[in-house]
Amino acid sequence: MYITSLTLQELREEVRQIGWEPYRADQILNWIYKRFVFDFEQMTNLSKEQRAFLKDNYLIHSLDLLNVVEGGDSKKFLFRTKDGHILETVLIHERDHLTICVSSQIGCAVGCTFCATAKDGLIRNLRAEEIIDQFLQVQSLTKERIRNVVFMGMGEPLANYENVRKAVEIMVSPWGLDLSKRRVSISTSGLINQLKRMAQDKLMKELNLAVSINAPSQNLRESLMPLSKTNTLEELLEVLYGFPYPPDRRIMIEYVLIHGVNDTVDHAKELARLLKKGRKKFKVNLIPFNPDPELPYRRPPMENVYRFQKVLWEEGISTFIRISKGPEIFGACGQLRSKRFVLR
Ligand code: SF4
Image 1: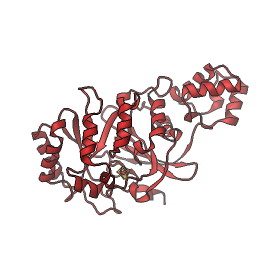
Image 2: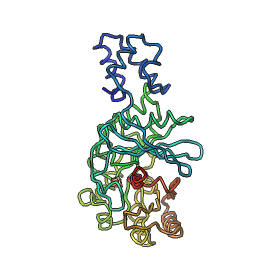
Image 3: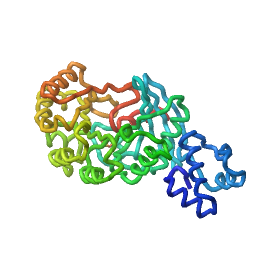
Image 4: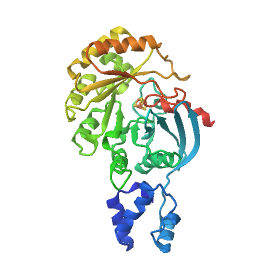
């Protein structure tokens, strides 16, 4: 069993059943999540017998690190699961902090036409310990503490709700990685039922929320994001307007700009009309598309990007441009997988 699949409560119960005092669970998790010690032998406040028992019966790492690719201000980590799937994690050096971008699924069922991950369909959900292990292994190779997590790698995190939720619990609990809830972001393609579930969930509703819109109209959105047929733009916006954030908190609207598809001034005006009611509830992130040889789309020239931003600003909508940190390795949700050929 993976110790990293358990919450403190669950591990206390586990050690109680072995006949140990419950505080042993606290000690073990302290080694893992506070000191990043992953070898039971080094957990010196446990007895020799206890360490041997842990070694024989439990595991910490659920992923094998295959490769690290450096590019610009980012590093991409390629991992292999124990059943042989490849997944990717990106560490991004921002101005004064580090952000880790984790994957939540192998492949993705959502099927966005501009996304390399979608090509594989969904292979499987990642388990909580596989999400946590991305953080642990990257942190152990990084001097500075990682304080920000974005669920923006491969997969749709809200389609893997239970595992993502458990990983988040480990990330934000004082006995776990102890990250601030405001520094953990869920990036979703807009699964309406799951967003409603998130809105009711004491733990999840306090996280940052980023929602991919990518088009200002139902028709265009359906052509880029087939899930939009059943998760319509109108219904999605209704759910977002009702999302229980305090007044000072904003939902991030993600918009991947694709040249000749959704990047014109008319698209910007239509988007501004669509979001006008939510000016105080939303901010917009414009993400110039990261070209991929396997996809028929192009990145817009920067003048289109600035023009698009200006239209939104003029309508009073806070709008930022997110230029990928090292475009060769980092993209929007799902574009991470586009460089999987590095392993072949
Ligand atoms: S962009 Fe995100 S949600 Fe859409 S198919 Fe790719 S991984 Fe899935």
